Image (cartoon, rainbow, N blue to C red; front, side, top):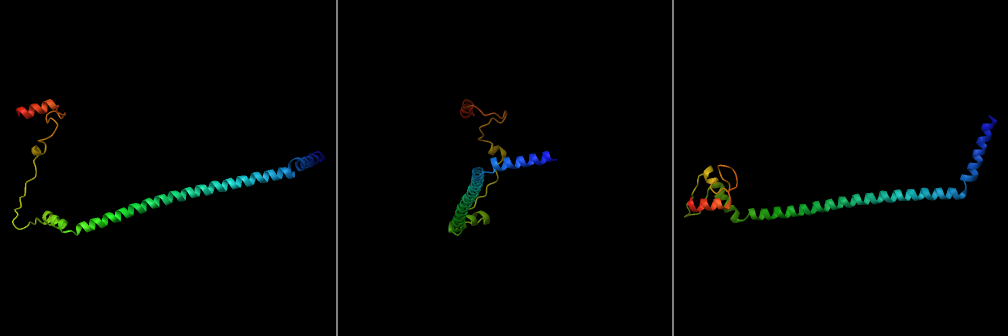
Amino acid sequence: MDKLRTSLRRFGYFTKKDFLTVHNIATAGAIILGLVFTYNAVTATTRNWQLEQKLKERTLESAKLEIEVETLTLEKQYFNTDEYQEIMARKKQNKMLPGETMVILPDNTEKAKNKYSDFDSGTGKKRSNFEEWLDFLFG
């Protein structure tokens, strides 16, 4: 038991004499202060960067909304014009001006839709320029 007590006293003595000096305590304090300062600087920088990103997003969103408002204002002005109202009256209600004749055409057939196709209807491949000229010249 005395040996243990003696070893603990030696350990305490060497700890006080070798490690708990003013120089070592000041160095440890400086290191701790430096770490705290570095941590706070990194935290502040990160927070500022995040806030800057939010500001950029909000600025971009604000610019988009301003453009959208301007577009809607121009659309509203266009919808109030006589030209637009005449076009819509002709299209939706089949209205016409005095002296005009309305001609209603039937829908195109599949043959009419595919008449000017660049593809050969039999093979589904693109026809060569030479084949198109032959078809044009000789029917």
